[in-house]
Image (cartoon, rainbow, N blue to C red):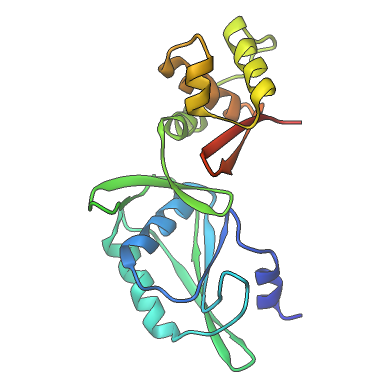
Length: 207
């Protein structure tokens, strides 16, 4: 198995995305910003979602990605690239290192917004993610004993997991800001997992 096929065999995920081709610079800019804001990532252009290699014009695709990174990301996202040859096809690999500064990209309305990666998707940053970023930068030490608010929220998650934040708002006796703060804290402390549901992001207790 070639090195490219070994990468493809990992499947799309937090740090890997397949693209048949780039048609929309604004849309791909969100993925680039999300990679830079999370753990870095890799785009393989000329590969279908199924993992089938169909090839691309690397020069044309790099022009599109480079424009997305420099024009539609703020600040511009640093990218590195290489070209793979698989049988008779060429595949462009674009690497995005994790960044120190957080990057924005334009949304559908042309407004600058933060994005991040969760599982294999690029998502708009919400209040919880902003708090997690703050904790990663400033620290948030885990206590030896959780207080009543934390324990009650953990119990609520265990009873309904995976549970969305909107459902937590409804079922908890705490105000929304407090719930956001505690969920962000529990994710940061690696007590709570996040996953993508049809209804949004779901939260569950780590096993």
